[in-house]
Amino acid sequence: ANAFDTAVHNWQEEAASGETLAEKQKALVEHYLSSSNIKNMGEGCPLASLASDVAREDEDKPVREAFHQGTEKLVEIFAAGESNHAKALAAVSTMVGALILARANSGYSVADDFISVAKAQLLAEIKNAE
Image: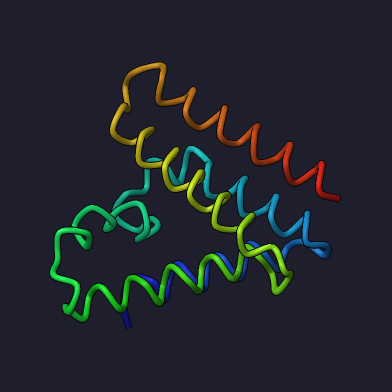
């Protein structure tokens, strides 16, 4: 099993808590940008914890393909089978970026700002799309 198996399972469980696309996406955003997920670096999302390491690997390394496949699975879970792949890419990018920046700035007020601003923006977009 790779690092994405757990993440895919967790995202599927979170998404399953909602009935509509908006409810599924809201659950994913709320969980991903939660204080427990921010503090849980060891068992957190491989997108946030491994991206910079994987980016340094040669393109022909198996880890690159595994990371790509895992990324696609998580984006598809967020998209929930709808034809909003571009919106899902933007949302996942925002969530991962906010998480990385919050972790890197822990102990400073800006860490909370990254999370609260990203969460507010994503939840507003989800609500507007309903």
